[in-house]
Length: 279
Length: 279
Figure 1 (tube, rainbow over the protein chains, first blue to last red):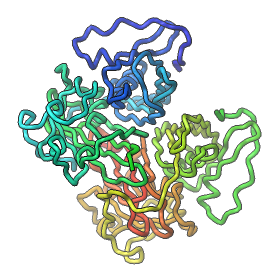
Figure 2 (figure 1 turned 90 degrees about the horizontal axis):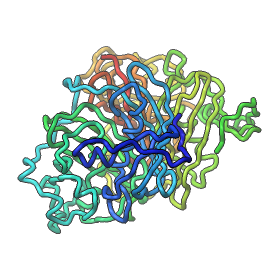
Figure 3 (figure 1 turned 120 degrees about the horizontal axis):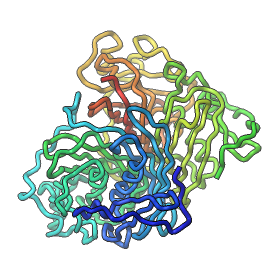
Figure 4 (figure 1 turned 60 degrees about the vertical axis):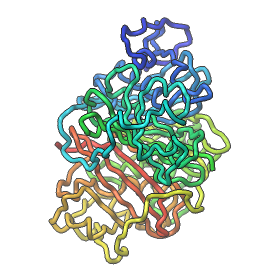
């Protein structure tokens, strides 16, 4: 068990990488034996609150530090409170670890207190073909024929600067003031720094689109309460396609169903979150 | 924090109820301040291993003991190892609690060690109409025109004795040796003791059907690795309809997508699990 260390500790050197994502999600052991991250306030979704997918990638890195397996395959997170930028401690409690998979619980504690509690399963993902799939990739025009969230009414938040997001014109009417009646968003997505996707980036992509309420002309805050992300395969280099859909809104709660395909049209991640919504 | 108590403790009296489900999922405080359950070996899925939905209901009860809110609305669980019947300790670590919802982490430790680690969110569920829903109830013949899992090739496990499960004939060919090519199961379900559904029973129903591989003629063990259940509304009395579907099988992993509707055709729960499957 790596417990949260009380001493200031020493962060390891920032990784020698050109990738803003890798730098912003870096974790390091402290001299006290804990794990620490320096959360980058630039990955926010407004009001100084960091994006949930970004935080999940930080948690994934912490879980991998001591896992015998190389990839995060399932993360189920409770978002306890909003997380601001700044130093954060990660408490990793390993569970059973076997030849096929390993379990851990990770709690992220930032400036505001414990803000994320996550069940993590790690294993080795492959690239071979699926044995069975009923997740055909949606038919979306190529990225250059899509609508960049930077050119329109998308939220001007830090997250949007780190991602290149191109909305399917069929789900982008709201950007031009013509909302749909369908709570559905589809978009090509990649890291703005050009870094290719991997399972950690998929954790980010699974919570990177605006709330689907934007599609029906109801922009607003939709804080995630719980989020489960399953990573199903190693993604090919290049763009990923993300589809997010709300299927049930009731009593101030909304689900957000998310699927991610890689550039080869393969399903690489699935996610579902429960969020609070304005009534 | 209720820590696992080392002393033998004292179980409170078994609830005065006619419901086998209520008795089997009862939790009680021990004199040492912990929470304990007596896991009923009769809720197994074979090999003395208890059903994951049954265990989740026990965890849900433990989380509600100290919550200011009455219902489980989101549970995300890692199944660390198989859980046998017998005494189990539940460690409940409360998280932030507000007017709308409260968080907790619950770890269930049975005879084989810690076997279930769960992020739990509690709140108050309603019965009012949904504001938005694209989850129409499937068209399934009434229960008496369906196929009881007790009459056919369903697994002869303890769980099957506690549930009355009636398979949609359209997804029951496998019972009579005529498997489908679709990994889909639909069934009416209710507790065999006649107890009406509530959010705790929905936690059970979300993991109560056989693995969907049965539908395509591939029966076998499919241990759950992680399971997220969202309870979306209070169910009406009577039968529930459960639909379970596997959308992606790859590298020895399968998802199981589950939706539950109540007798009024309202969506009351959604779940997704990641399970291991034979290759």
